[in-house]
Every structure is written in structure tokens, then in C-alpha cells.
Length: 449
Image 1: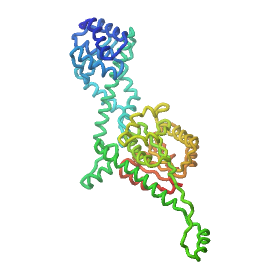
Image 2 (image 1 turned 120 degrees about the vertical axis):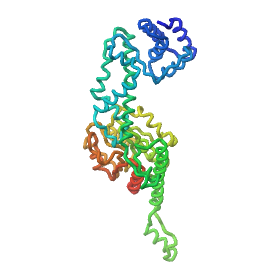
Image 3 (image 1 turned 180 degrees about the vertical axis):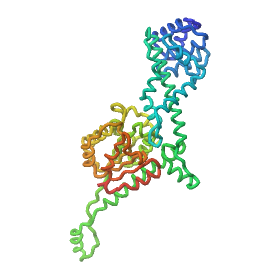
Image 4 (image 1 turned 60 degrees about the horizontal axis):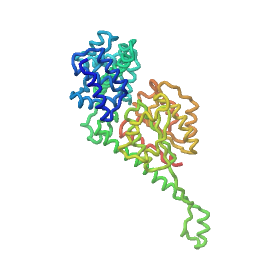
């Protein structure tokens, strides 16, 4: 062992002084490893301190700076480091020590993608969605068999577990990079020569926008929500101007010699939109959920009577949250994705809609119109026909925005045909122009009555 035990103990105290506390067992495990595994250089042992002591990403970030200050050595985060143990196969140890480890991961990632088969990038799903599909394959599992060893002691078991975690993280990273490269190479072609830049952006698929384009489109999407809210407001005002009470008007005119100086109208009724908004935020919805939530944000800012829900495998009411936040904070809802998972994190439309109907019933809400943003992909779960009938019975109008290309509706695990049967109006919505056209097709009279 090149680093002295006293130096490790001094480092432990240094960490404490800088408010970074780890149990003594961690340091004992580190010393045991360094004593039993001779290294060529002190730098290599310092790298093992960085990989063995912390147990999660947050601890690694903290200890990195402490190591660099104490040992006056830089830790290269872009360098993939594994800690070898004697149970590993020599071939695998050679891979660990390879100077071209990035190339190795590149090759493995490409093989896994090619063996998976053709990836359909026209579907409105994120890169992570395809990564999760690849992770479920036998080929991916076989890449992890290196770590299926019988450890001689607790320390080797701990090191093996951390190595496996690092290996998976790096492999997943390279798979995502390759998927993104493939997605970029298969993007739909646009012909800006035939369109102005603004018109081109209005027709561009949300999924293929860059950050600047997305920011512009999100602002326009919020305005669409406000326009929809204003249309509700104008319609409710005109619709609540009481109708003429003919008999009372005639009697009143007799007092004025038969002249209709005063018209008697029914009392004005202030109407509120009886509307429920739902947005699927599951993995298959990619960033379409962000545009959907931004549209809903523009509506609920105006009306307290509108209820807004997000769903994955169950529904969550976010109406109050949407009214309290600012436009640039809408994306935080998607960042809190895990808080909306109620079971396994996979889409469950039957459970979500069942919960929605129960919530409406328990809240005494008599909403008559439902607006849904979702692809109706249900992870091959069944949807009972009786539920579809109940949804149809409980709402007089159902509007549905599906961000998936129409040619892929009702393929694979999509069950959109069930909901399309009961929809007042449904449409493919994956661009701003399609979204605008969809809003123009909402019949306000049904929403307010």
C-alpha cells in the first residue's frame, strides 16, 4: 500500500472538518482493499478512494473536491474507473484496464441497438423509452453477467456492486448517445424555401425542436391557452345575457300605452366552464407533455372552476399548483415525475380514468366536458369496455389530442380506438399549427352547459 494508514486517517479528519461525514466502516473497507490489492501508483490508489468511499452520486461530487484539495490531485470524471477484484475473469479485467474503454462501450451499445431491431422514431417517445426497451432484452442482461460472481467477503461484494453500477451507468449513457445520433439522422425533412421561418416553426414537430425553438413555441402555446380561456369568457358573458320574458314585457308596456320602453329579461346567469383537463406524462409522451401542460397552464390561470390532472398509472390533481407557479416553472412538474407514480410507473389508462371518475364523484364536480392529451398506449394492459361506457355517460363532450402519428394509432399497445369511439373530436397534435386547429374545433357551448 503506497498511501500510509495515517494519511487515510488524516483525510478522514479533513473530511469531517469540511462537514463530510462517512462511517468508520467505510474507511476500514478502504484500508482493507488497499492493503490486499497492490497498485502501481499513488494516483491509482487515490482513484480507488474516490470510487470506494462514496456510495452515491451526491457523495462522489462532495468527496471529489476534498480529495483534490487534500492530495493535490485531480480526479478525471470522464475517465471510467473500475476496481478489480480477484474473482473477475482476466478478460474482463483487461477490459477494465483498457485505454480505449470508450470505444468498447461504443461497440457494445451499437451491437445492443442493432440486435434490438429497427427503432421507430416517428413515435412520440423519448430516447429513455427506447433505452428501457433495450434494457429488457436478453442481450443487455448478458452484458452484466461479468458481475455474477460469488464474493469471498463483504468488501468484494461491495466493490462488485459499485462496479456493476458504474458499468451500467456508462453503458446506458453510450446507448442514449447512439439513439440520439440515429434520431437526428432520421428527422423529417422540412423545406423552408416554400415557407417563411415563422410558418416553418409552426409546422415543426415538437419532438424535433431545439431549445430556442421550443422556448418560442411554449410561449405561443401559453397564448393559445389564454385565447381559449378568453373565448370561454366571452361566450359565457354573451350566453348569460338573459332572454326576453315576453308576457312580463307586454304587461309592462300597457303601463306606457303599449310602447315597449322597458324590456323585461330573465336574470343574468354567470356561467363557468365545466371542464376537466387531463395530460398523460408517462415516458412514451416525451416532451409533448410539456406543451400539453403549458396549454393547460394558460387555461387554468383564468378559471378557478377548471380542474387539471396529470396521470401515469393513476391521476393527480395539479390545479392549485398550476395556478401558483409561473410559466417557466411548468417544466418542474415533469421534473417531479416520480411523485406522480402510484404503482409501477407504466401507463395505466384504466386505473387513471377510474380514479378520475371517482374523484369527480367525491368532489361533487359535475363537469360535462373532458379534454385529454395522451397517446392511449397502455403497456398491453386491458381496458374494460364498461369503463369506456361510463366515461361516455359521464361526459357530454370529450376532446382528445393524440401526439402520435395517425398511422400508428391502434398499433402495438395503443388502445386509442376505444377512446376514439366516444370522442366528440380527436386529432393528431404534434405541431403548433395542429394544436391551434384543434383548439378552434372545441365547441364552447358544450363546455359551458
